[in-house]
Amino acid sequence: MIKIIGLSKSFIGNTLEKNVLKDVNLNIDSGKITGIIGPSGVGKSTILNIISGLSKPSSGEVIVNEIDIVQLDKQSLRRFQKDIGVVFQDYNLLSNLSVFKNVSLPLKLKGLNKEQIIKETNRVLEYVNLLDESSSYPSQLSGGMRQRVAISRAIIHQPKLLLLDEITSSLDQETSKVIIDLLKRINKELNITILIVSHDLSTIKKLCDTVYVLDEGMIKDRLELNLFDDNLPFDYKRELGIAS
Ligand SMILES: Nc1ncnc2c1ncn2[C@@H]1O[C@H](COP(=O)(O)OP(=O)(O)O)[C@@H](O)[C@H]1O
Ligand SMILES: [Mg+2]
Image (cartoon, rainbow, N blue to C red):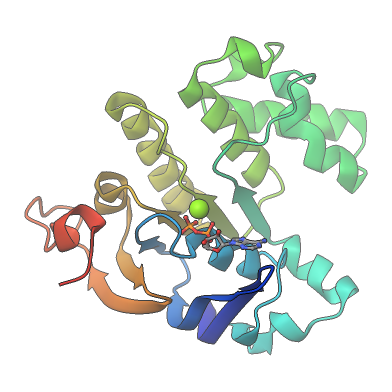
């Protein structure tokens, strides 16, 4: 679905240039759940920002359907972004809007009429089991519920690709499991390809079909995971201290 080739990204500081991504190569397969794992600060969110078109790489290609989206003009990029849903690390929910209004926002921006908005929003809220919280505000919800609101908002326009940034990092194990199960359903039932970046091994192990290990600006390893196998091949470099 997406082929990332020779991706690099540098940030220019006051005096120093920081080469965060040096040469990242990876594939995101259609219909699968792909993960990128690596220590904090290694450039995982930077990769997501580039794929979602929020940030331009210093060099390299992001090929989608044989088109390099890095080269797209604003209008074409916007068209591509319609097929993407993103959930950021910190939910990004609007605190002054109800759950219903948060989730329906993309449809409102798209110009759907009231009837359609109500129908689609209720459909998604039911799917994530949040219909009862429609009129609640984010501050009244648990972390897991907030995360489900953020996921709902990201899938309401039926994207082909869902990008997730550290989405279970601040959740306890039980809540993480609910989110992981939901994401597996979204992947299988709604046929949405998923890319998740995280430093949380336990989530990645339970969720992903393929995992790339990012360290020192490069992909250091690629693992195919068998979801039915508990003895997975990674203590991954001692829980991501990496090196060695
Ligand atoms: N806009 C920016 N300007 C300067 N430095 C940045 C910017 N965004 C990220 N960085 C730096 O790039 C590195 C990787 O950041 P990030 O992609 O957020 O890592 P991760 O998500 O793996 O924790 C960090 O050192 C961070 O400080
Ligand atoms: Mg990050």
